[in-house]
Image 1 (tube, helix red, strand yellow):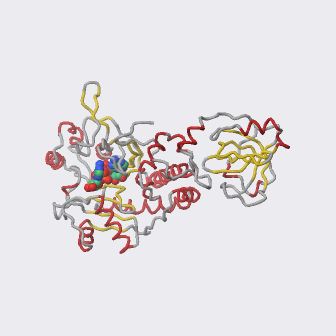
Image 2: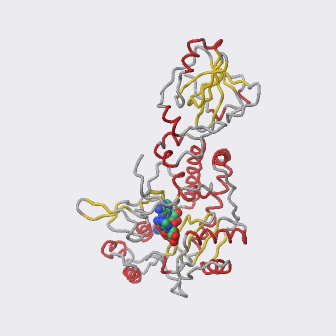
Image 3: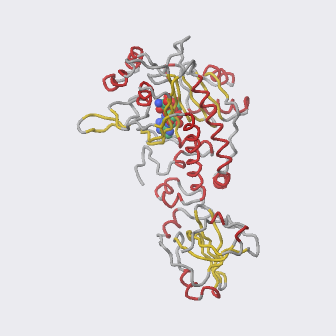
Length: 457
Ligand code: ATP
Ligand code: AMO
């Protein structure tokens, strides 16, 4: 058969030519003897005008009874509409030919989709009010909406851009085990399981193994992979399984080298997304309006103490050696935006007490540490730090943090044969996309989300 043309490619240049398209029946309306079928493909829509004089009465009868969401394939001529169209993304008509209007490939249970997901607003876009749970229960149908098609294209582009940055810089992509003998980030949020009679955990992070790769002289490594956290509570930004983007690297002089990398990587990603995904950003904005992210070419870096000072001056009560709660983080995000005109910044030199055991204490004041968090629109997307590379100190810190040292003895041993100074960071992909598009819930950026209540679909 004829090669398929994407609906998004039905543009001015091909008016008058014959195309073959495949899509879903988005809407189906009979006016006189003409059927107006809006066909949707990957979030783009086009009007197909099915005329009895061209296709015959039987075909009209057949097309009329097609349920919404059925997949059809047809061949027709692209033409200009008489009046500007309002209900479609493409300003073109397709006029199907009699002999080549194919039978539907699949007829879906459209009744369900119609009642649950596609209760359309006026211009044919799905109502935003449909409950999140209903959407997630019917995720396959939900993914078909233009905004969701766009979200996952943006997510893919973020990942591509990270790869583009890493590969030429000789950062090695690695794959670490997800089945572990012990936890790496602290005990409570870990999934425990039985590993053929041995107690085991699902990896809470590639942390221990990415550091061991550095001990194995791999110099600079990164990993993109699943991360498991047995989060108890149900929040807008915590999943029980998410995609972690992790980096670990040798440090030459100072842990700021890690922040330099982050400071370059993210402005690059933000710029590339705007360049490569303009249609997708538009699509998301149409469904969930948001302002483009404000960021500086030179990423802003504040110390934790400076952040605390700003919050205090604004009348907030904060513990200078404690962690910031979600509200304080948001508030600081606002203050930073007002003062520095950026919604992307780093906060570093956190109090040691609130960081994981492997974090390097600050050499001049052991109340603090060589660590940082990174924020988009006042919410955390990343944690990073220099790591302890002295095995005695590492073991001491693990004990102080109540880690069962037996379960990580092979990790601590890795440092006994000489280890270079090093550090790295971990980012959550779903959080980056959620905050880039200012979405209110991380479930919107997870294809099949897993949270404290959801294990299906
Ligand atoms: P991570 O745990 O990965 O460092 P996070 O975003 O979960 O990242 P935390 O450092 O755990 O951040 O916590 C920061 C703040 O977020 C906490 O002080 C708390 O207010 C809030 N928070 C964290 N986890 C939860 C949760 N499961 N439920 C509700 N609030 C939480
Ligand atoms: P941390 O625990 O801060 O650090 O996790 C790093 C980043 O992962 C994301 N994230 C989550 N995303 C969705 N749901 C969750 N439950 C969740 N928990 C965390 C966040 C967070 O900033 N080993 C260190 C990283 C390092 O130092 O290299 C770590 O795991 O975006």
